[in-house]
Length: 399
Image (cartoon, one colour):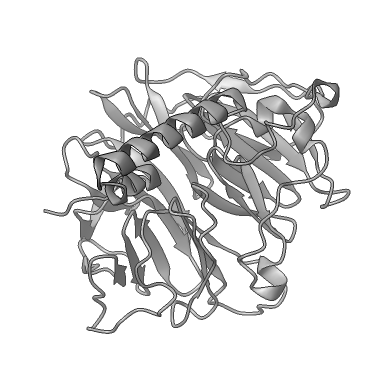
């Protein structure tokens, strides 16, 4: 039975701080002081809140999505008939057209499960699939062909366990199932009529990606790589990399990957202008402060310095890699694509710092669609950054 690591950076600091009573007391006092400062300045690791001036405050253009929703699942862009739409998991399932006019409303789709919370949304074969749970009742449902409601005629497609993530990789739907409460994690895939096991079990899969050659999956402390299509129990549950031990044919991982852990998200950049054929560049981020990149399917890796940020999500807008950085909100890697520079980290420009409801948020998911970036928060809804006119000065607004 595997133990999934969820220890935070603060917990690690606490462990290292054990020592003589005087030293512990001093550290506790310092921690309390820092906590007090963070609480009164926007709860950010950065100093923007400290120097914030009310004269700079700017009201965000607001749309119809509730401002206090928590983003609970992912966001996708799909074409339904002749209409291009966004679908978003924010407690319930919401959708709207991709027209950026501010009068375009979000429509809420009633859940087929009482008090069901959306954990994932994905599109396969022109149909949208949604995973939900209320804690005791779980489900995987398909939307109707017009995308406006749950298809109750096809019923609940999977109800055995809670689905925590949905991924569409290489036109295949994958589901990460199980929770830490029952410790029965498994990675499953849709075979056209049912969710069936891939063979990977006992690992809490939090992210997935397809680099054009390999399927990649991440648990908090492990990476899996498969180059064969999934089949019923066809994948051997042996990590390509594990924090505890390197275990792919006895080979050690690249030095830059070794000893990295607390993985949170994967992103494949299949629009990198310097790459003409797969494998495409793969990015990996962690809540431990690191970003990693491989351009050769995992043969070699490049690692950033420890940014001391809790990175939760990674995506791309325009030609800029962006990160959902938890309490540090959104961060950009302006040189990651062109120069493989993972150390240069910056705050978005434009009106970003004039929106306290945005830069004081905890951003857990980022979604890039061309030159438009969406940032999902834990309590302040969904935000949109328009990078189309000037990438150095995006225009931010609240959905």
